Image (cartoon, rainbow, N blue to C red; front, side, top):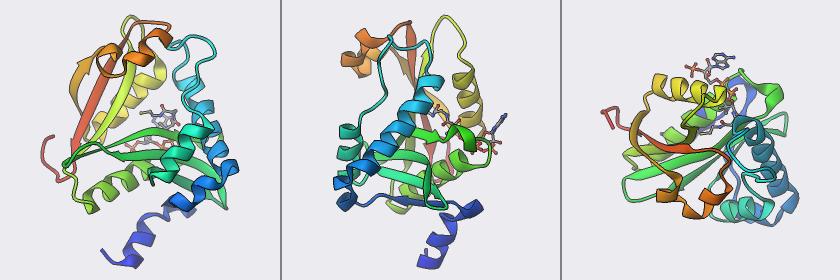
Length: 194
Ligand SMILES: CC(C)(COP(=O)(O)OP(=O)(O)OC[C@H]1O[C@@H](n2cnc3c(N)ncnc32)[C@H](O)[C@@H]1OP(=O)(O)O)[C@@H](O)C(=O)NCCC(=O)NCCS
């Protein structure tokens, strides 16, 4: 893919989508803005799932992800309006998480373009599978999780495994306020069933 095509891909709807460079990890204001956006959207999207006072991330954690070149931001007129973390899991699999679009900018394609960027990036780097994880309350329905399941299914993700958070992140289990299923979705980046 040419450089021009890459720039086109990341500039839909006036959005500027790009990785933060590891050199920007020292900019704590930047890491703090990204962490604040993630925490703000997850407070609503995961309302009722965690004991009070639990936050999704911290400036320090985001800073470490920036240092590892795992944080992508979406900017509109310079302002951060979305983000996603992309990480390598193994030789064939990468994962996106911490996907967030600013509440005031919902429904204009920021989330879709961030996912598209992550998938394109994964393909370019030679990964076969994109993974994502959803924490879903077992006994009741969380509207944002219902929306995400429908959306991810529509764009090609399929449930690959369902377990308990204890199986994957035992350190987080005591922070849950309700019983949840931990659902892992896969999408084959080469157009085959995952
Ligand atoms: C998930 C999230 C990033 C989506 O961001 P967004 O920019 O509002 O979404 P988009 O405008 O790109 O729309 C994404 C899809 O939802 C659809 N959609 C958007 N708003 C909708 C609405 N009000 N009703 C129905 N569908 C809607 C779009 O049509 C699009 O579907 P398509 O790809 O099939 O066209 C955003 O809702 C968010 O930050 N949620 C909280 C954090 C979270 O749950 N992250 C995911 C964890 S895995």
